Amino acid sequence: MTANLSRRAALFRAAAVAAGAAVGSQLLATPGYAAGAAPAPAPTPVPSSEAVRRAVEEAREREAKVLTGIPSKNGWEMEKATDARGSVYTRPVPGTPLDVKVRMGEVETVLVHVVRRFHYEVDALRSGDVVGWRAPDAVGRRLAESNQASGTAVQIRPGSYPTGVRGGFFPLEELTIRDILADCEGVVRWGGDDRTPDESLFSIDVPPGDPRLAAVAAKLRAWELTPGEGPGVIVDSLRPERRKDARKLAAQQA
Image (cartoon, rainbow, N blue to C red; front, side):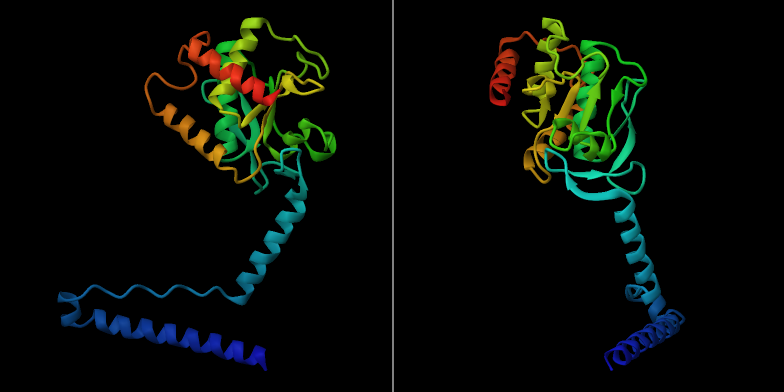
């Protein structure tokens, strides 16, 4: 009975839409309409049951192909694939020869900023030097590296800074890294500060929906539009106020 009523309602609505279109076309042909009021807005098309069914099937297929339902260490969902209608895509790093697989949106804005400043101020990077997304079965799910599987972390030259080893950077290079982290106001964590260090790893350090991430991303985007701001501009990381901010953040994240 309900199905019959639904079909009748749909047929009635379709008939009403068709009738409305016919009336509208007659009005358009009258002189009074041509000289008078604006036309009424067109009715919103109602998707057919077949279109709805296809959309549901496509969403389920996407979930099965891409989503895991499992969070990485920082709380973001790990994904099985990239460039596959999920949240993780291959993105360019402007001003460098690099592409990196990262989560689109605010995460991308922040991590790309980190990579660019590293490229300009720590050491020039080459294609292949930065590893973003990694498959969930290739990372330790309880480790910070699991954040790569959610597209929320990158490794910069992982072969040069092996896990478990500290002191891979010269003092001035580490000072610059601390300054980059201060730019990000605590939403990025450096793996060099972990109990088992991975000095190549930079991860988003806030959960999904945290307003701090949105605020930092907005700041970084504004810098891109402001002459004299953002990556590529010479930064004096030794300025007392910058050193103070960097040291304060390092103490908080230790």
